[in-house]
Structure formats: structure tokens, C-alpha cells
Image (cartoon, rainbow, N blue to C red; front, top):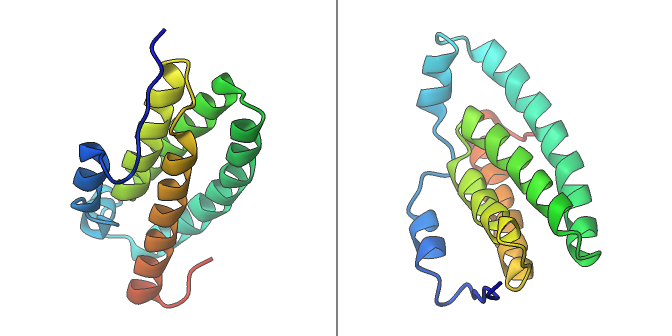
Length: 133
């Protein structure tokens, strides 16, 4: 199986990710019928779950556990897309696809970008709703 090498500087997909909105608040609010209170509750729960997954993902990566990296990245991706955290979802998707290929070369850079996307998401929530989680 071919190794996949990816750096943040030469990855077109990472550059494309930056053009995605950090948070599609309107889509989430639409999905919830405009219920802002429910949106707040869902975002709070999401942030709690995200923190748990983000604690486990680096452990799996540094243990070179390709299967667990793929699973954790998949869970982060799915949850993020459902609440409109588009950059987080895309970063997690890239990490999942790398692990799905059976390789982790380049995964540290993707993990760093995922963490950066999560930080951007937190900042966006803070701008919209005050300090979040």
C-alpha cells in the first residue's frame, strides 16, 4: 500500500477547507425550526462530546492505531457536519480518509489542523453567543 505524504503547505484540500465557513449557524437553526434554545443545548452537548473525542484521538495517533484514528475522526466528522461546524468536519474527514488508507504519514499535520479548526469554531461561537464551553 502506498504511503500518503501530506503537508499543510502543499495540500489543496486543506487550502479549500479554509474557504469553508467555520460555522453554518443558519443551517443549524433552520434544521431546528428556529429554536435558539435547543440550538444552544445541542451545541453544548456537541462541545462536551468533541472534547472527549479530541482527548482520545492524539492517543490513538501516537499509538499508531490506524483503526482508532479512523473511528474517532469519523465520529468527529459526522457530529460536526450535523451541527454546521464545516471546517471541523472537513479536517476530520481528511484525517479519516488518511487512516482509512491504512497510513498515518501526515496525520500529525492533519491533527494540528483539526485542532486549529476546533479553536476557530470555539471563537466563532464566542462571537455569536458569548463564551462557549
